Image (spheres, rainbow, N blue to C red):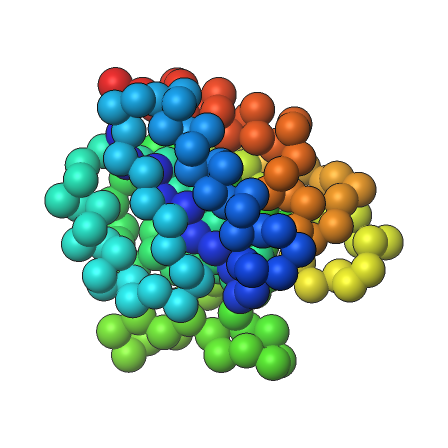
Length: 174
């Protein structure tokens, strides 16, 4: 199994970087044979595709904040089967303050989950939680949106979310 964790804009704020490293360690413990990578949201998508292709599947892609948008853009650009995607309070790159994800001179809709993604679990803040940066992923047969009363960086360290991610890793561990 290859697990790719994509961090958001400022992973060093709010303890998110430490939480993502703990998540990587937890995934490695759940599936000792796994290849676990942590990358930043603005990583080159073509480079990410090459790296994960070389490592082989099954594939688990996890994205937090802008990393969630990058995860979706990666799945759209690659077009290959991604067994599981877990988005943690994803923030769209098409936010007025940010530039949308661009792949090979084409804009990618950051919140349209491609059919190649077998299952996508999206964890979001309730609309009343401030600031309301995130937006739900379009609900389709392969997407589940779960709303929680958490702050933006808390999704990376919430026990319920981490248990879900560990379970996903164990299911895909081969």
